[in-house]
Image 1 (cartoon, rainbow, N blue to C red):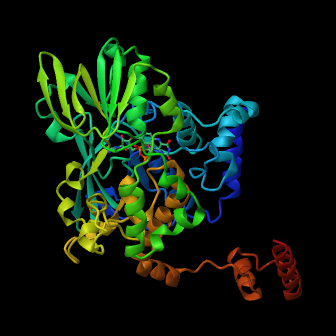
Image 2: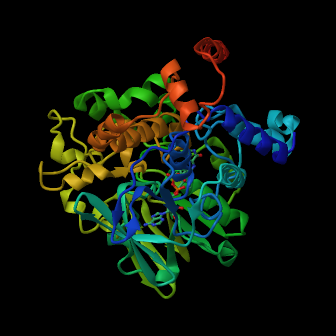
Length: 502
Ligand SMILES: Cc1cc2nc3c(=O)[nH]c(=O)nc-3n(C[C@H](O)[C@H](O)[C@H](O)COP(=O)(O)OP(=O)(O)OC[C@H]3O[C@@H](n4cnc5c(N)ncnc54)[C@H](O)[C@@H]3O)c2cc1C
């Protein structure tokens, strides 16, 4: 089957799921414009799946914006430098249960069934191509090159500032979903104490654009031990770097991946229902004590180069730039590099996000809501936002910032509260369901009084009685017709028995 035929099938299947078809949210207006029901910030996989989920629930008064160009949403065509995803190829989630929308259906249509059997995993580029197709076939209206620069309360709504080509549009929304990615609750960060004296040309964070060709013949230092550390080291080696030293603090390579353990329905779907103490204990083990190891492929990719050396127990203490070379003092001695790549991940800091900066101080973090038992503290976990049941932010001080209930955090920052969800391919299946259910529930409940008024005013007759039929005929001026009541009875009974078949 070709991709075009698969697309037809998706469209056809969606018609089978068209019940209930009614678009039901009640229009609101502010400053002469229609208020959005939902504004989705981020057109990566999380934003796309949320938009599709809302569409299935007939919430269509939405916008999805992304600051990147079309096709460059998320890391996949930019800094995901691995050959293959870590995720197993059978993963589902974005499809929301529709088989023809799964990665497998797309891959088989695009490359053939044999190809599917041959591959172990999808490459990042294939994953992005799948997302491009998903966006197109579902006609999800992503608007690219728009950045949300600020979100603020506006009475009983939220007001978002959308910047495009230097111009700012102000948009009111009842709900805003932040599907802003792995770093959406903070920022990618090289350790500030190490880079203060380094000129910008001497280093990059692993998520930046790096011209690897320029590293040919150079000595490259990589700090970190996760997937990105190994994939960036491999990219430098493949580009002809003279030597790559990979340094990390831990005594050895992490080898066990606790996130893989979480891949079962109970955990993925219902972790959020556990008590705070239970959630803390699970997540402390997963997010703090046991870092994710690099994938096997990434390890072998580096290991085959003789000029690749890794150094465990090698915390970096300081760096100075001397004569065009970075001299790094570490626990394991002194290193000299022409270029450094910091694969040091992201730091959770809501205030560092421009869109959240003015309201970040109102947002509750785990450290505000939960005190761990002695000996079970975790600075890492304490900095994660403490979210409500549908990913909404919660208030640090009750009653001070109720608008936070309209702002939903579907980023990796949600992991402490709900486990893997939006910003992980493996978490989408349950995460999107939880988020969309919560959004739809809130939109409906907020307008319960208006729906009740609508019910009271509802006067669409579904049943025709003899009296109403006569009245109807009279209205048509058909009183000259020679219908007897018995004729009408028969006509109505015939209608009824027809209807009963359905
Ligand atoms: C290098 C890398 C490899 C990964 N590999 C895997 C893997 O193999 N398996 C797995 O399960 N997970 C993986 N992940 C985790 C996760 O799947 C990805 O981070 C994924 O991209 C998350 O999807 P998302 O939609 O949440 O965010 P993204 O795909 O990052 O999309 C977020 C979008 O939000 C936009 N945005 C951000 N801020 C704004 C703003 N203020 N205004 C407008 N737009 C904004 C960005 O431009 C971006 O396009 C990986 C992550 C990284 C970084």
